Length: 98
Image (cartoon, rainbow, N blue to C red):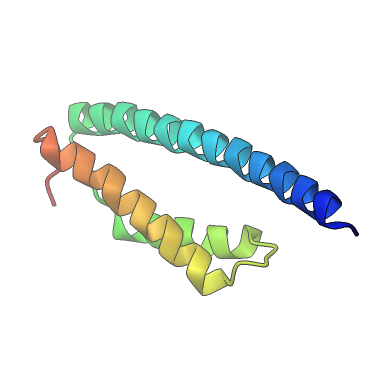
């Protein structure tokens, strides 16, 4: 591959990464909105907002769905961080109670 061909391919791949990043941001915000709505319904029903068994089930499912190349443990870490940060949003709104 020539230098110009290689540079072209780099730019194409960067554009694909940028597109995936945009989609990740959109999907993460969609997940947060769904969790916010879920929290409202849980509060109205008197159901605890935090369910450690449900969280562990989600993390197991994420690892099961993972096809790589990201390690299962790393995928769990990523999702755990996502869930915690969304939970932080609820805490900031004064709705999260353990």
